[in-house]
View 1: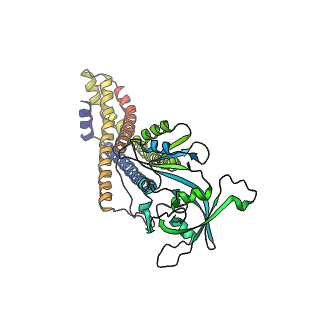
View 2: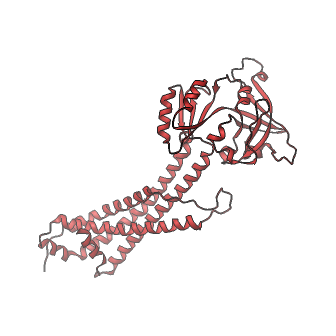
View 3: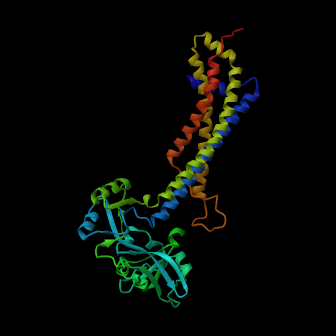
Length: 406
């Protein structure tokens, strides 16, 4: 009933045309703000999915790290126990250390990651090897798959048509007791087999080889590792799986999800998304001032109608709700119009990729978009909440009008 009154007041002709203009301006501002909010949140969702897909090529679903120090001991029975968990598809044992990579006069510091034969099953790095091939060799004949940034810094060549020199890897020895610094490091030759390209953070930092070579050079024990990287079965919940594995392993190990392995990135992305959402909400608050003006003028316009309603027995609360419904109606119309416009723009972008990046230096040349239902609910709820608050004060004024029938 209240919305019926509100709709009649909204579309009825007013004695002052300014009331209609202010009302439509209010609807337009709400529509613009909600459209912008949906578009921005959808673009952020698209970028978040893109970044997650890039990082998931390197960060695995779960990773087991030592709770203290850089290594832990994991015997064969414990490894079998991990692999037998029903939610785990595959696991890979890791030995990792910083190293110095030399190629003639060029040298660069890298994170040398020794992996076993199961690594392609838990990580997407093998599929990102776009030059040469993914091959780690053996402890006696090690091969290296380096990031594209390391290739540029060290002049690594993997083209079989061109001569390739052997690379030198210098690693620190574990628990070296000699006073001679030269006895505290190991030096070995490796040959490059491939180059991967994922994302600059990884491309400039990591190189992959076989785990036996790394353990041999550093001096790891037979059951000593830096980490275990794990691929879960499809549709398994990350957090539940992490908790179950943490309970199974005990306090000496630290189990992390792919998001916990890089919390700063994901926290920054979320912070940026909600900061932009907050800024755009200010546009809705500006629209609220227009709404207060429109409803206040409407109350003055409908004084006689208010008096008639009160004389017919309408309580003050009923008058209050009618004008409150008028404000909510403006919010509903504006929010629906803005969301509909945003959906149309998003669908056009998804289908035709109309808005593109300049320069062409990114992995994709268009703005990625992903619409999520919760974003639509949040934006709608925000618009309606602001409209409700803005309508409260004019509605309160309307309910306080005295009966004056002349």
